[in-house]
Amino acid sequence: MTPDLNNYLIVGALLFGLGTFGFLTRRNLILMMLSAELMLHGVSLNLVAFSRHYGHYDGQAFTVFVLTIAACEAGISLALILALYRRRKTLDVHVWHELGEATPSEKLLRGSLTMDSPVAEPELPKLVPTGRVPTLKGEEVKTHA
Amino acid sequence: MYLYYLPILLGCVALVVALTAKRRTQNVFGMFIGLGALVFAGMLWFEPSIEWVDNILFLVFAGVAIGASGCMVTSRDPVYSALWFALVTLSVCGLFVIQAAAFLAAATTIVYAGAIIVTFLFVIMLARQAGKADYDRRSNQPLFAAAIAFVLLCAMLVYLDNGQVRKGLNKTSPAQLTQLLPIPAGLEPNALSRPASGESFGTMRGLGRSLFGDYLYSVELAGTLLLLAAIAAIAISPKRVGGHL
Image (cartoon, rainbow over the protein chains, first blue to last red):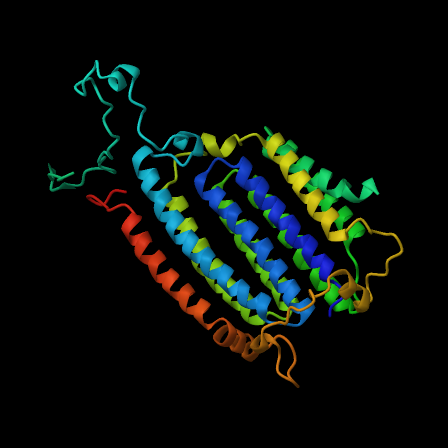
């Protein structure tokens, strides 16, 4: 029974609120994920404070699970972010407003137009050689890029 | 009574000023408002306990955690944001230690500061553009988000204090605290999650008994989930072609 439970709850609430603010305002995908982790910190602080308050280990056990979920989430989200970045070379959320394919036009839906109308090419990654081409004894070396 | 919610308002103003700052002076101005809000909040909300060491440690860790998370949210450079987040994690771990959760503090430091932050930093540096990107410089509806955060925090504080703030309720006596937050009747805590008789709360042995006693199936599930997440991350992550991302 510690008398300072409320202090910890307030700190947890503030961390959660700051995380919410960051998640809503930041446009960088990575920073949005970091803000979500900040909210998780607030939650685990609450759990630990209640665990101490009631004198049981339940809250601490839950915090271990929160930690596990946070690790899983970070791994998968970073893989997704990398895959998204590879397609459009930006981390801006606004670019990813629509993830689906373009809606087929009215004519196509009514059947008066067949699929041979121009369809947007999927954005494929382009290979760009970086850096200076190294030269060996004055002659250029062929790169396979 | 309304004074009680003023620090939240000040903090929201500081966040908006720091996020929309065009010049460095405005940024510093926002930082000062935020510091003022923090000090004000500490004066209004902090309920000191009997141990002065606890008080000082709590104030330092909580202040650093909230201040660093404010910096993290408003920083223009994602690398600095990640580093601020590491500082937040370390301070939260300090709070864990005060709350008798030493194992959790160590685990959180290792998992967050050791693994998650490093992975985030790697991804930030992989996806880095020349100069500061536009999406880092201009934020998305800061006023609107500040309003939402303000309402959310006020609601949480109202609920926390149950409308009985500063009305002569002596909150420092444990009896009244349990009266405020009683364990619901007919709800026994898990048998293995209680500290054994003669054992103080907060030992690693106790947490281990709880985890591998009451929560054994959950631990197994969590381990399986970690494995699945690792496989999923490998499957999702883009394949490298010719050494380019």
